[in-house]
Length: 149
Image 1: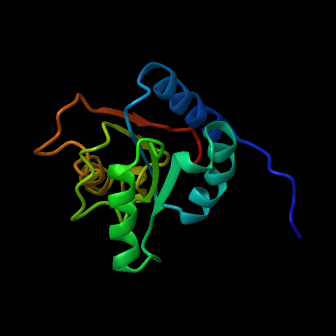
Image 2: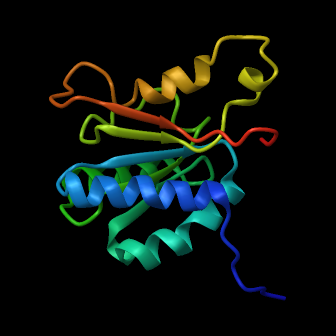
């Protein structure tokens, strides 16, 4: 049974960030990372509603290599698609996304929450954008809600 969508503080903040980027940096691209694919599912509707269906793509582990490669090429080559939702673990290694210069981490990698290790997975994800070939300043946003995951 499908229920009506109810937003959250985290989703509202993400939409504020995306709106600010869209209004002030119209030609710039954004990578939105989450370690929870189900959260990426939840983000699709509000993002499409706010920015249009063509504005967003998705990159996650359940996609085969060909589909992931095609998505990266589409994201890089499209003037309309400026938001890419990426599962944190899938997008943390071996991916060059220097066409984007904004990174939004919607949740902290769980080992960071436990304070047992440095946020290596997050840093690797950010490095997909902030790497050799990047021509623009890179902005990183971490959305953290106290007392939550």
